[in-house]
Length: 404
Image 1 (cartoon, rainbow, N blue to C red):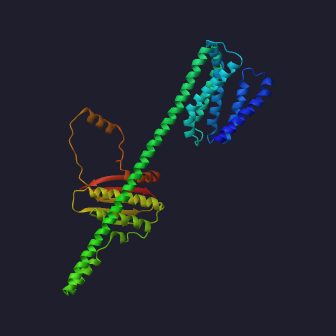
Image 2 (image 1 turned 90 degrees about the horizontal axis):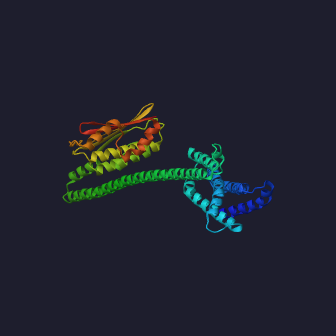
Image 3 (image 1 turned 45 degrees about the vertical axis):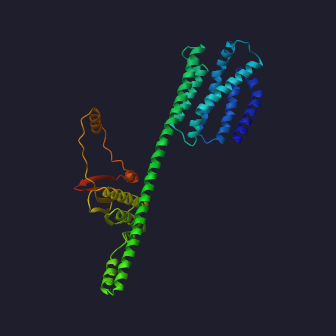
């Protein structure tokens, strides 16, 4: 701020010095040349001070020149309408105050949009606003209305005000639309973060529960071995040790040679065990050109979605079977899992239900909104893949095909 004030003040003082020499030479009675020199120096300073693109800076320069042209005639009529006489130094002071106040109002209207779009490049909006402000300048100085034979002040005044309002409304509307879009994207991003945190917390609960279950089981086994040793039953001790050797922790199993893919399947297997779900996996990486992080995202989100759906199934034997089949030109991720039976409720025929039915027939069908699979959809769109879900008996099949 201090640098801007110093540079702007230096540009203003330099423009005053140049006006002392150039205004008499050009017989600048209206002050248009002096105002142009001042704006030009401020524009040169703005090129080095601000990050806005050159079109936005040109818009502000044209706006200041337009303000001067518009207020030159307005100030004369305004001073003539005052109930007391004005002249000499007082009229100059009043004219300067009117120009500064009007320029402040016009600049404060665009300060937030221009600050928000400071790092943007050229756009149709910025070029359009610049052209509209240039057209407003031609109306303010009477050049445009003079082509149609209109030389009175009233039409120029109202048409200039109309252009000012249209330009201000367009700039502020674009700014508000961008801010609304930003808020929407931020809210969606925060929801995705919360969903990711929820998945991590579910995994934490599963891991802690499995560790506690393993601790309790080990205590129980040690108690049985201690009791058998007390009675000298060596055969029971051998049987207990043999049975204990068959019990495996899902986190310790080997699912893939790739450590990242193995970790993803192991973590989901532990989560499935915590939920009482039997997980079977056959994951083959193959010679894929898909990035490992993208492969892991698809695998993890698919498994998490399948486990959550199977957890809602009304059956004792809940199963999730995950298969990854790499081919020469594509990779197929297929999850077969237990799923709750669809509930169909008969609804009374109302005007709202009829409109909903008509809308569903006219609008294109979209995939079910599942935040768990949002990242997967992004990868599918980038690779021109497909994702579909189908039901088979008491199970569902989620098939994701990614072009390799």
